[in-house]
Image (spheres, rainbow, N blue to C red):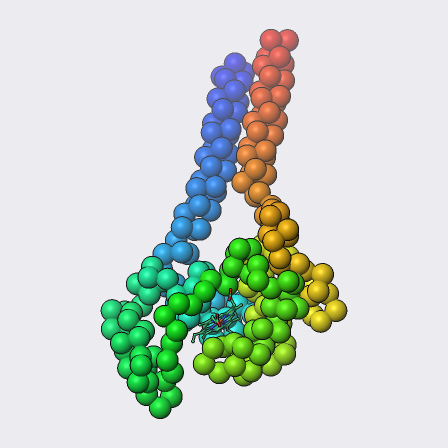
Length: 225
Ligand code: HEC
């Protein structure tokens, strides 16, 4: 009988350790995943979720028509982003297609291509409607006006979601876009992303407290016996 109680008592800390290890591992693997996704292929086509929303659809249009110039993170054509390409493609201006004398289907690329993600990058647009109008009429730079209205909305929704200026729970359209302000005062207080890590830590603390209560109860039972 005594042995059984001892065994049970040993089980409790063992259980706690196992659970904590599991939870911590989950946090770490979460971090590792976040780091991994940024390293492998930064030029890979984005995969869509089973039920893609407007901004998800925009992510593919962005990848196809905007990423080569504006970067995988909307950072613009930075030196760092050009390093992602194979060496022969890094100097976009010498490589025949975008230099001073482009091929037939090439074009001269401006030497500076601005960032399009981040509140600061979009400040020259008063609101999402103005941004969509610009994308529709002026982008992609080499073939302006080639996007459909809906494609321009989806790409705009994607850029805004990446900038944490649009929650993307509903569709961005000509009715609601004017309410999504992009000018300076809005940029001063970007939407805060939900802190998932905080929730996990709270869960760990809760589990520990629950186990402590269980442990103490078992001990008091033992004393009675
Ligand atoms: C061939 C390169 C190229 C491609 C492709 C391209 N852009 Fe641009 N984009 C530019 C350049 C260059 C400018 C700056 C134009 C200017 O200042 O007149 C610009 C400016 C912008 C701006 C304004 C940013 C600012 O602060 O001035 C936005 C927004 C934008 N592009 C979005 C897009 C979107 C969305 C796509 C894809 C549908 C796209 N671009 C595709 C080259 C490109």
